[in-house]
Image (cartoon, rainbow, N blue to C red; front, side):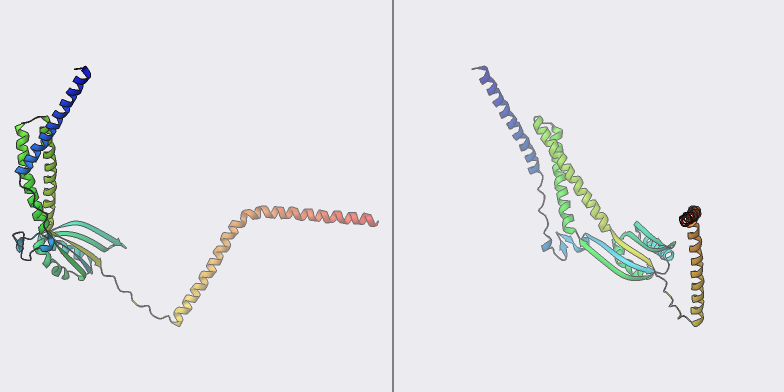
Length: 293
């Protein structure tokens, strides 16, 4: 056998061994996945029972409630104090605040509050005692299907994680198998953290409803102007005439000052031009006198 043939045979053997190790690694991960229960299919929202959802009673439904109320009050400070006391009494808190001021007084404000879901329905009637509710809206989003589905997927991934941790701890198999298990373990942990984050956010939104309160102060009504009388018209005409005369005087003073530098140039030039013109006349007279004499 030549040297080239021997090298080629060794390369083929190494390639076959690499493929075998990769196949064994994939088989190890696949076995771990088969040992864990499969994730359930996504829930179909079109066939959701009215009284129970996926075996959960209607009382355990996951509902996210949101709403908006526009409130008109006479005084912002008094209304804000009452709203703060109402929020505190319900066990809620203010999530964000935006206040607009006009002429050193609060004219509009927007409060985004979080209150327990069981206090959401009773909040709007209590706000009517503080001011005039000009607009209100609410929304209830039922996320029970998504919540139950995510819980099941989380449980499945947690069981798969346990199985992968056992394989990674055992350290049985070659390097490719160990690396494949660790890569799959990292992927599963990422999914678990994502599911846990969604569930935590949903639980917070279900437990604490979001209500936006737009507060505006009532504007003072304008008093209708009285019709003008002869005396008021005469007085207004006199003041208008005096004002026009004053404006004319100011215009003359301002423009006179503006033309003053030009006068300092124009006057000497005019005097010089007059002298030259007089000399020219005298010379012309002398010339005519000589012609006729």
